[in-house]
Length: 413
Ligand code: ASP
Image (cartoon, rainbow, N blue to C red; front, side, top):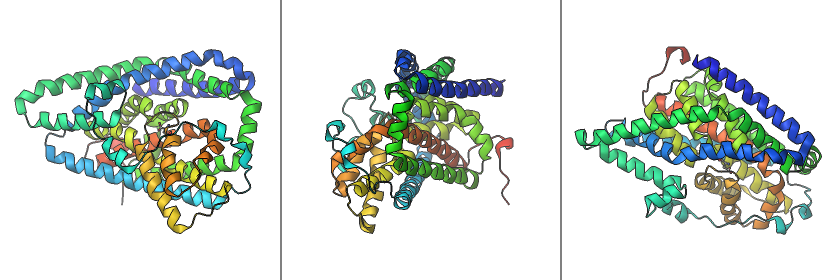
């Protein structure tokens, strides 16, 4: 039953993506008239983020039973995040050096006038963003990292209270289940929402001709990013098979809906409810799932890290500035930090890239060069971000000895 409805949703979303793409391509700006339907779908998903993150983290951490186990799960999760992010940036650096996408780019094409509003993000800001003076205000402004830190502390405290903590944990269990039910309802609207998101975005760029023109100017850069993301996708599949010992096709089939939602919304946070659902259907133990996924959606962004590395090297090449080995190592480290600092919302990576550009002394105006095509690359990198989180849940589950169905096991000899 579950599988049937999943397949139906998958097929209708695929049709929605194709139909949205074709209609946005042909009818261009006319498709802006359906933008509100996409907005409705996206906003409905966003509406669930704060209660779901809180309930998921609290039940996930409290479910560990013993506060000491939190250290082990937290350590393995952070180890996974850091390793995969570093691999992603390295792939990005290799791709940018191979493709040399910025060589010969016309600098006039990215006017300073189109420069986005960017703020500075430093390492200290990153550490300070872990806590927030007012948790209600943090929830109101969707500041997820301090909410996560607060919920981890709350759950750890609750699990030390014995009987007195149980009703509070039970409340969050109920809230979590209810939120997942609401997700199922919202997903009934997904095919329409996805269609509208894709069609109106293509419409906003001016339809087919304008899109092809945009792509042509930055084709090599887009190819460098996309081939890097695909390579990293393969690495993640290998990790899924070798470390998490899961069947890749079976796991991927459960993730089809979240991955397509990530592509259409360009937001890992908005996709989180579906990632939780997909990973649950894949049989990942709930403690791992509820802890790793919300944290991953906020700080683990392999796609973003990879994209930042390619983008920074592209800008350097376009300005004719040679980045030597040491500077590329600096890109490796700062792009990792910048990806951790990026929120799971559309175009967040573009903003935190300032950190990387500043570290290697490149002009911030360079961001103007890549703006035109960022809406497309954002969707591609978000899809890899979400896949990285989902693989992380399976890895943590495996390494902490979680349970899973026998038909998903991979025999290792
Ligand atoms: N849109 C991405 C995400 O939500 C972040 C980024 O801009 O790279 O995962």
